[in-house]
Amino acid sequence: MQAVHFGAGNIGRGFIGLLLSQSGYHTLFLDVNESVINALNEHKEYEVTLTGEKKEVLRVRDVSGINSLTNAEEAAEFLSRADLVTAAVGPKVLPAIAGLLAEGLKRRFQNRPEPLNVIACENMIGGSSMLKEHVYQHLSAEEKRLADELIGFPDAAVDRIVPDQRSGDLLGVAVEPYFEWVVERPAIKGDPPPVNGITYVDELEPYIERKLFTVNTGHAVPAYLGRYKGYQTINEAMDDEEIERVLQGALEETGEVLVQMHRFNPSLHKEYTQKIIERFRNPYVSDFVTRVGRGPIRKLGSNDRLVRPASLYMQLTGKEPVNLATVIAAVLLYENDEDDEARELQKQIDEQGYESAFRHISGLPENDPLVGAVMKQLDAMKKQRLS
Ligand SMILES: NC(=O)C1=CN([C@@H]2O[C@H](COP(=O)(O)OP(=O)(O)OC[C@H]3O[C@@H](n4cnc5c(N)ncnc54)[C@H](O)[C@@H]3O)[C@@H](O)[C@H]2O)C=CC1
Ligand SMILES: O=P(O)(O)OC[C@H]1O[C@](O)(CO)[C@@H](O)[C@@H]1O
Image 1: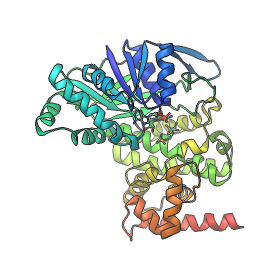
Image 2 (image 1 turned 45 degrees about the horizontal axis):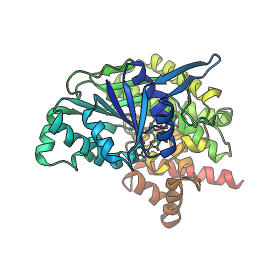
Image 3 (image 1 turned 30 degrees about the horizontal axis):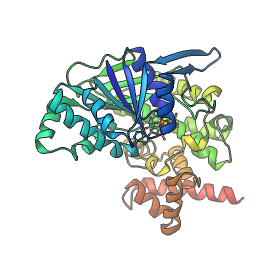
């Protein structure tokens, strides 16, 4: 079986590539990082280390790579013959891979008109659906008809913390042992891809919302408040009692939303939350606060990990989400010259002020009560900074 995976980064190599290899796929990675592609082709294998008190080293064999920027022709050929296509490139990069994927599908319709599934494994709601929209922009009416018939774009939720890699090994990845990969079954074309470790479900929404609004909302707390308080790493931030309090509070707020919306058992949800907080404390996967906080504009989006649960909390409970509002305020104070979105965020704040920039980025209307709740926390934090 041949899988083609876009993005030979942390999740690509440390999670998706590992599971594909363990399920008997040859995995071809498509990436724009020439050094990583060369290393994949030279070694044809790499190591994934499951970190913890006891380390376990797993070998991922039978891999290769193509630079999709400089060798698009060959990449399209492989895509046209693949048994499964996956991606983990980041939400903002999905539009950039759509043209090449569309070219692969066009060739497939000519040469091998069989079902194929394309799974985007990103921290977002509706990643594969968004990729599909971009791919369809490159297809004719007849090609869209064929794609509707043959190509599935099932949405997915992926959970495994794979931090910045500091070993110096270009291919080896250290990851936490825990993982969850949930894929929506109804959108699959043909048989579900036989990947050990995928859980197929009929309805994805509860899983992706639970993951995004617990793991990602939660991780955002030590990232943004950690940066605000001058910490470098998630572990340092997790040792701060005030940050710990906001984290617990923020996950109680998202927990109320999730339990009401998806009827999760409240005590089981509490257990799930506490396990996640323990994962953030894992010293072996502690990351830089700037990596977990990367892309603050995307993270202030209306459907993302902070604004959506905070808005739902206000709608469903009528209460102010004090803790989520505090984290959103910390995002508005987030500065990092090495992050394009952080620079753009501060530019918009300089030009328009905090309130207007926040409304503009989040898409919230002028009189939305969440805007007021965030501004209240922001004022308090600015005063605290001055004192
Ligand atoms: N790191 C983590 O713990 C987790 C990350 N995710 C999600 O997985 C996705 C990837 O994240 P990471 O692996 O951490 O990022 P990463 O930055 O390590 O990997 C992204 C890879 O995509 C490649 N890339 C960029 N543009 C490309 C293009 N046009 N064509 C092909 N490849 C391209 C980059 O060169 C890089 O190798 C993101 O959506 C992230 O939210 C999800 C769960 C956990
Ligand atoms: O990839 P995003 O959306 O920027 O989120 C960042 C973080 O999300 C996590 O997957 C979980 O919090 C981290 O491991 C990762 O660095």
